[in-house]
Length: 193
Image 1: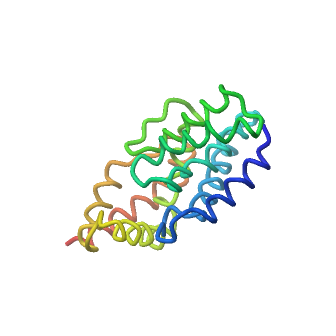
Image 2: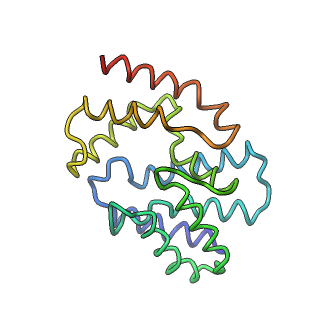
Image 3: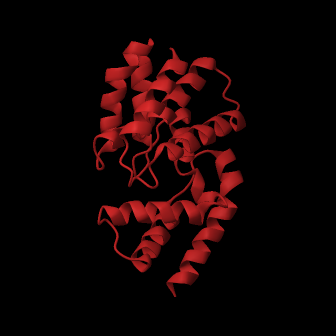
């Protein structure tokens, strides 16, 4: 697996091909998810080099489908991975493991194993961070540009419902993010009244 080349390829593709109005799902989000996934892998004591490469690759490509579609981007990301990664010495088995992780980020999340849980949690890491409001504002702008949300009140209600139903899968992620996530939820509920 030549992750260096696979990383360089997807960074350049995302940088040049993503719509400029993907205010949330831009290259910055992919980099953020890679960082969170690597932090969680360390907290979960994932030491197997192959697992680490598979996880990082899945994080790098998890939103690559946005280059071509908005809805169904996870499936499109898997199509891209199956097309591109054999050229970087990834086996069919490795590619299917990566696709499993990408599909685990689809809402509602239904990860089936530890690596899928880590990527699912990394993808929504911001829900329990101090930069939540800034990041959620970018998602609001992105959805508004696609006429998927219309006003801040509707967006607040959407976020309350999402946070009430969301949970982190990995124990170390629950420990490091749940308290702040709960504070964000309470603040959103107060804003709704």
